[in-house]
Length: 379
Image (cartoon, rainbow, N blue to C red; front, side):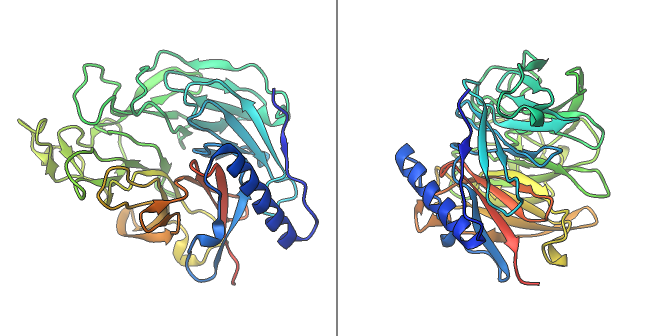
């Protein structure tokens, strides 16, 4: 097992942030990654972005352990644990928990155990926060999921119903499949027993959360490619009952019939999105903000990490956006944190957002191998 990565720091916070930034830059350059430069990011007045850690190569989906450990999945085969022991907003240690896995993007915690989703299975590491330096052998929870790697990476989470939600992305840009598990969000018991299909017609969801007070599931979905720069938009959807169909591959973004697969279907057959997002922004991780650090107008609102487009004439996304909601309805969509994209050049790609107990917001960046912390500093 590789040793933990240590981040020695002086006691002065400003010096700590500077030291972490220098160390992260050196590590990123040595590994051929982009150098994380949070000072290039712009956020609304009163907010500040700092580097939480620059030592998590390929950082993607995140979740918090019950003792405050941040667990981070990747597509490169490794899973990490990040610890900020003195809670000063800068990581002290990064532990490598596992290597050689098959796109272990998804991480979730329940009763002290870390659940890790690979492409075709989910495994569990018990009492993980007591064994960060020497993790226990994993226990199989779910086996036999589809092995296709196209949209095969998974975001997972436990819902208010104590069920494990596991998406299975479409194995293509756009297609129909004889395997009904594709293009769905599935539900399982904590022991891996199947329950039902929460949502169908979901092309590629890599982020979801539950609406506070309503327990409705909200999830992002990435629209199909090769219809043009501005068609279709990505989606933010809301599900209150299991089994509904959200359109793919027949209808996109609620109103756009697919030129190949829409024959015999009407877009009104399917659940419309709660709101459409930017076209090809690659909306991934999302969270409702439940904290109190941010001003009241942000509480109960949705933050979305946009990974950024790869096939538009002009790039779009590469930011964290804000969707304002009220009474179960999405009202507006606007940028919140920007700067990973400079002109047509991107130095970072946001993947997920995760609220910390103090109310600050973490943003993972798999291009720079970094995690940033957004805090509100002006009362």
